[in-house]
Image 1: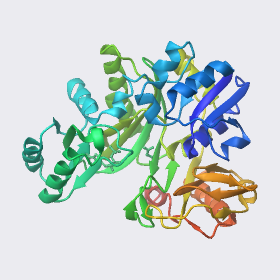
Image 2: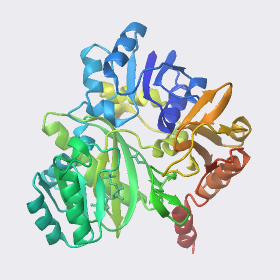
Image 3: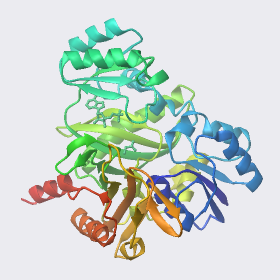
Image 4: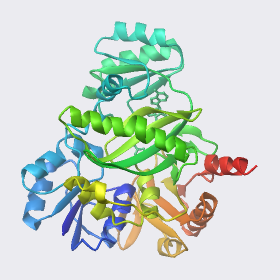
Length: 428
Ligand code: AMP
Ligand code: GLY
């Protein structure tokens, strides 16, 4: 089967690496891909948002299965357009992708079906939004309803910040995404991500992961798109994972089916866990980035077969196999990220680092220039390792980081600290 994978980051590199191992695959194309992906797939210069061009390419090459890494194409109808053209695709549909595309949609669904979330209200006018925010106490969370590239959430610590966030959203700070807003209760606890695959009816739990959003060690400094991640997440104990599955994910899948818009695809639940009880922060309709980079290296089952089973509604027949241990990824970023940074510095000794035990290096923001790999973004590499424990995965990942010659880059040195501390305390 010929497969078209859409996207260009570390998540797509991890997806490509798993798909490339599938016995079902005859040829893998990636649009637009990156220099790391180019080693295992044929990259084609079509942007992830250009569904017309993707579809024309897929028809010309007789693609048998199409997969989008990022959410934007899915919310814009990637699945629906491909399926309408007779090309099988990995969902969700645009209707299903509303679980990520509209924060208000998710909160309404949770309220209607009794799924644990946050107290909230939806608004199109500033004044009622401000008085509701005031009634919730502090901190309070203000969200643009639509997709805002991960930036549309403000945790306001004061009334003034809340009012300003509300005014700015209605003034267009997030464009159309902020025409409607959600004001919601601040949930306390420890955050973790839980991933499941569903065919619209059957739900196959995948695994949990945790990431580090702050730029510097000790979870300090500005927010980023994620500086590292690990899987499994010790806070998602088997009991908590079971609750997340039974009280949050399965009821959501059942609700989407009941509404006549069954959800097929990956469901990524962002959870807040307090006293062993998970509550839903948000859904994403795709694999996480960098969470995919730590989930997929642990998976032994054929990923392509799993994704196809979600499309064919045969997930119930699948049994997953995982490697016993853990995986951890360290994001190497260009110095200055998430502020201003330079592009174009050369990265050396990548092959030496990638040859170390248990190590995979996923490209997130690189380019090829005169035969060399150069930095081409803020977050540039995902240096990933598997190991028997998170500590072992961490040691291996940092050994690979240290083997890479890239003076213009930096990374956090403490990825996984929460999990490692928890393990140490658990063992007394
Ligand atoms: P989102 O864009 O929905 O992922 O939100 C970004 C981040 O804001 C989440 O990862 C949480 O850390 C935080 N967040 C969002 N909603 C809430 C909430 N209701 N309570 C506490 N933290 C939240
Ligand atoms: N790691 C956060 C995300 O993929 O949205």
